[in-house]
Image 1: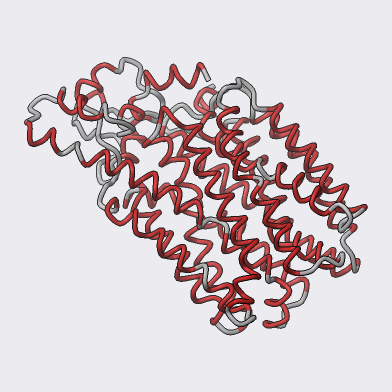
Image 2: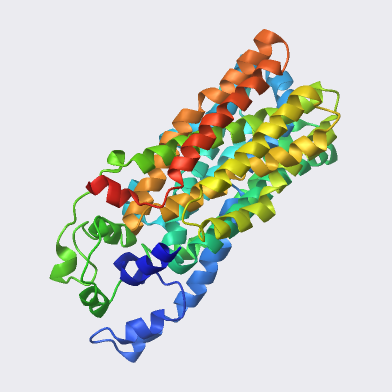
Length: 472
């Protein structure tokens, strides 16, 4: 945490972020600034509030497309005539889309601005969720799902970037708020989808389509920010004060103000115009450890979201109760997703948190294997605690890089690589369930994957940055 605080005082990217009211005095120091120009910073307070609302609404929409389907997977399979293998493929589509489309997010953000990309992402989610129940056939359902998941993918990658850029001094608390809203949206969709379906006549199609309304509402706070290509530019005085420009900072300036060249500051000063060496993220062991950790926790999360309700239903639990159990698993992330990032930013090593979460996962899987219905509520809670590895991974993305450009690059690398790693997991669970006729082998697979997750999570939690490792 001490390192993070010292970084804030020396990193030019973070001085560009309009986190708080001090933006106005910064503008006043700009040579040639008039009273009218200074007044332009007044809307920045409103913009910051809009960003907070936008982050919360966007986070609420990043999982209902998945957990609403998990709650009605049996009905969707029957309605579309899916086999277990095809259903497994369906549960593997989210990480596949996140890997393929997530890598595009930094480039899109540089060209159009992060706010515009997230706004388009929310619109894509809404359109995909509205179309997929009525697309007709498995292929149409998968294509519409991919459209929604494309919007989720780019928003997933850009959320840590937006938090780092707009709230550089509150990375832990804002990541916690974002993760808490994400967990709330996840659990609400899991718990409410079956009752909503019943209230809408018992047909699974409107029960899935209703979640498009939440996504379309999330478009609204981002619309006024679409033209904002980034936070307030650094003043010439701020640029001159920085005597130790960080590696990759020129590209960070380009990300803050798409439309300028990667080696040119908005201020036009020679110091900012010198391009910095590109960050070779693949040279960092920490980046690889974080990517594998992200991939293994995503594997566990998507297996849980896609299959856990069905595991309980096959154990004799009713559909409504199974949806509630999945919601309990997801809702555990609401308080913990706010607490864990704040605790993580105060620790020099996040490995102990990784171990605690991993042990909870092993205990939950053991209970799911030996007594799936008898202790179902306890297993749901334990697996919910274990799934909080996701906000921890997001927090470590912000902590393992010194600059805004580094965070963007690490976020894209860790999430895209991680989601690629997670693709086979949900598909393999479906195949193992169909071939073995039970859930013993799939649960054994989930338990086995938790061990390497704990190992690489410990390595990713060490106190170092990817810039330092890549420069060696």
